[in-house]
Length: 516
Image (cartoon, rainbow, N blue to C red):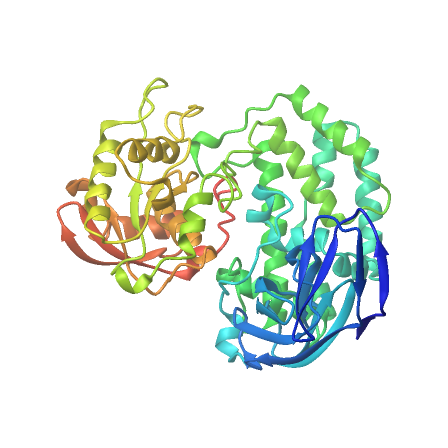
């Protein structure tokens, strides 16, 4: 309970005015400056939450008194995990409960720098719901590309409680010390890069170590249930239980590290896409590995060191920004659409989005091909027919290799020139081939909280449109992604066919290190 005794503030400083009506406190209002304000006793407390149970993403109303109405100075946690505040006054806070395991957790409001505990909120997800991806999950991404490929390593290198816990594992500490020593004493760049690879024996040892660390309900169990499963990024390696998922996720991330080093460092592996060949010279690799050696610190987390090495190798090849254009999506390029998304009445639309895939040019001077313009025009027709509230333009810097033009960005500019408001355009600027047009569409819709159970439509010329549902594209999904990113429905007209997204599209694709 936070209490402020009666006092007089003499000031030229920001503060809060205590508003009273009929002798009762009704609100606190921020004031730019005051000469003299007398505060009465102020008590902050939480009296009720409603509802008292639900799933991650449930919106709760917290009722109480004496809350700080400044959203920047008020926070809410459920079981120690930060919730998202939607709005608040001095007596009510509307918040979205975060990811947590099943169980009862206290709701705590931190107001006026004082934590105030309220009733418990109970998570009551089924086993299937616990293992399924959660739209409310926020991916922890200190940097973009490596996070997409190597999420478990990112978590282990970023979250303090896991970094600290690993320091108590002798096997981990011994390996970290030996890795750093090999890196620092390497005779050349090739030796340094080899020192950071994971052998088959080491991968097996580490997978077994994680299995030994795991126990039902402990922090390693929570790592899976609060991060790996909700993120959806490890669906293809997801085991029947959390222990199996943890071990399999480590193995996948370790193999990714090996692929980056093999393709762009030692150059004994072939990239999935022919455009992604290694370009770094020996001198460039030497320079970047010298940088790693000079910046690596004693006691540095092994996983952080692995990511640091891969980041340097990608930089040496000029690949560090290949698939992170316009990220984060919500604030770079798509801010207007994300604002509009909050007020969409989905009942007014039969479809979630109109997908408009790009068709890249074969030269370096053409910004937008006639085929891409045609597809934009098809999308405009569907938008004006109120098929869906958004057009999603999809395509990265693809053709020819090294082009300065991004297909999605150029299509967005064209749509706006034709009168489509920016708030109705979602830009997906990274897809490099048709399977990833659909996969990335599914990812953006899921992460943005759009209704994934609602069908979507894709527009295209009729000849390639047929390939979307005649088995041709389905075969490419299997070859390029390893799963079916979407399921196709009916052909609505010669240039428009419907499809349903699959949340398996959230899965990391480790075979394509630059387009995961």
